[in-house]
Image 1 (cartoon, rainbow, N blue to C red):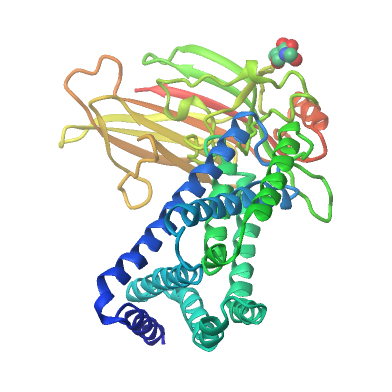
Image 2 (cartoon, protein in one colour):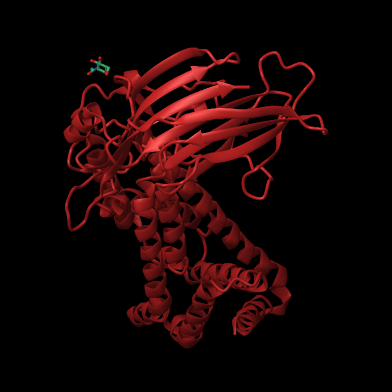
Length: 485
Ligand SMILES: *[C@@H]1O[C@H](CO)[C@@H](O)[C@H](O)[C@H]1NC(C)=O
């Protein structure tokens, strides 16, 4: 069905191009000029809207649409629509000045039809089922066009023509709006936990630009049919400017504790005690504190007014020589959460501490070093491994024996067991260089107390109590030990 639809559309387009047989080259040139203009308008629109998104992110007003979704439509949607219209208005003034307005209107319809038809053929050829969306955007407009062609060529863009055109676009339009709604419903919550590195406004702005381009594809031709776009442009620009000013003023608070429509700020607070051991087993550094991860791009900036000691003076420094910056991650996602905070706090002394034992260190016949360990501790533990320069983790007793590195090259293992489990035994095998005076591998283990009497220290309880009600926090204690072998 997709191929038949595409074939009919190609037939329609080639018939139009071949119409006055003497002017084939001229017709082709016109069609591709319109196509080029469409491309230029997309790029210009994307660039403009991304600049707005970058500005909003830089001044610290990210996620202003997290609770109030319509803000994003009024901010990025109006900017996208205005820019699209502006580019085509300029094109109309500069390139299609002396033409009968029906002609460019027709050409831009054909250009949109061509783009959707090519997309339909390519996506169908790739075997992707979502090609049916393109089929909607080919079949309905083409059918509409064929039905109202007479009206248009005889009387031009009359009211009847416009009404029938709108009616013809209704089904693909409604369906695409429904799909876009689903995409936004899905991505908005995700942007609330997408880490400190990806600006959520840029992602959402990009989605809005794509939606605007799709929804406007068969309405661009109207820009060439109407007398003036001035009123539309001024209205859109005014709406954009007012929304931008309101967003910059911070009137749209991102988070909400409304139970019917909760938009929480997610935070993790881990009360950590860390010990860093050297090659001889001596503790060379130790500290403890409450390690704070804000899950979104805004970090802790909205929490600071409520809890002043959580501010940017306590950003966690990265322990460069330790795997994953020397912090007790429960997932290897440090590359998405580079900004986090470490509030000094007293040491924790769990009732059920971790016991970490080296059972053996042996040189295998293959001339690699095998280290065997025994670990007992709470039900959830994580292991972090970084082979030193020149050495490599060749195999281990975990999984299928082939270690797979995380982003950044360190190795991450999350281990959990039942309450009555026997100690965890595992080994790692490293190929080592001849000279290794600074050790072959750094290996760290963290114990997570997710429940029970060791879960929350008094300091952690007190801090969690003080967080505002629009936060959703998780708090637990952990110990972290780094060893070098
Ligand atoms: C920032 O945090 C530090 C340490 O938590 C605290 O000493 C300082 O007073 C805080 N600054 C402000 C302006 O609240």
